[in-house]
Image (tube, rainbow, N blue to C red; front, side, top):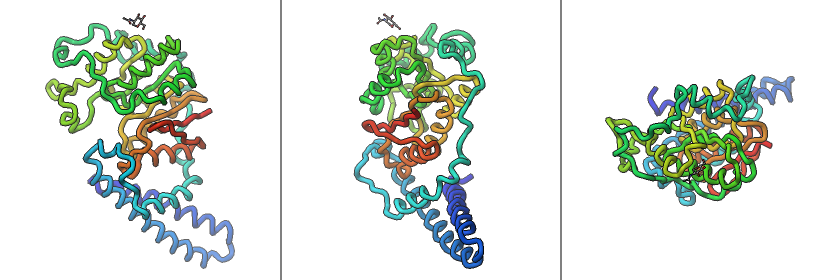
Length: 339
Ligand SMILES: *[C@@H]1O[C@H](CO)[C@@H](O)[C@H](O)[C@H]1NC(C)=O
């Protein structure tokens, strides 16, 4: 499908929601004068639909024109939403709650959740055929391409990590979006410092960066086109001595979260920091939430991101609304506590 049709499709899906709500409400309140009510409902619906369509198009073109530079996205202050987009977003949010139930995934993944102590070995068995990926690392054909340590990240050592590890004292952490592992290593060291010696950190990332990644990270080598991000991450884990607690799961976030769900893996703390486009973070939130233990905490970076019409904030708030949670902020991170 051509990309420019996607917002239209989304817009028409969402546009149906206010139409349905308004009509139902009017019918229930005033069953006798349906004729007049329908007319009113049609007019307001038409305006509604138009506004929402407009806002999606403005949002789409706005995001397309501002998404080329990811560093600009981190600039919180200079790009206010257009007034139209703000107004319609509020209006949409007000009419959505009754329909949000339709989007809720089944919350329980496995009938028999895996005991915490078995999670790491089960994953080594099922994903790696019983051998830790760290054994005999690094393989000779990439050894020459790796740096001893390369831990670039974004907000990877901010206080939120300490706050949450102290509060949750997690036995299992799932990180969606690991990259070079800066926050992974930070969490592994914090866990050790807090005496959480058995804490496992599952790192979900396809470890391929993104198309155009090479232009920003020329020092991460490609071997016959394959990005060596996985190996550099693993090298970082070896160098910082966290291989006992960290386990990479080098596949797409969507498929991995679904498989973990099927295998009964659950977590106390989940960090969502992969793709930041609305559809991407929305999917990660929904899939990851099913793995969260009751009372667990989900959190992620870039709450103040302005790109894609503040995609992170939109997705997190819509999600929180859907499950009745409150969004809390810690630095640049959003935090959803389920207890
Ligand atoms: C590496 O970590 C392990 C715990 O996982 C610890 O027992 C060992 O002393 C550490 N080694 C160094 C050199 O710090």
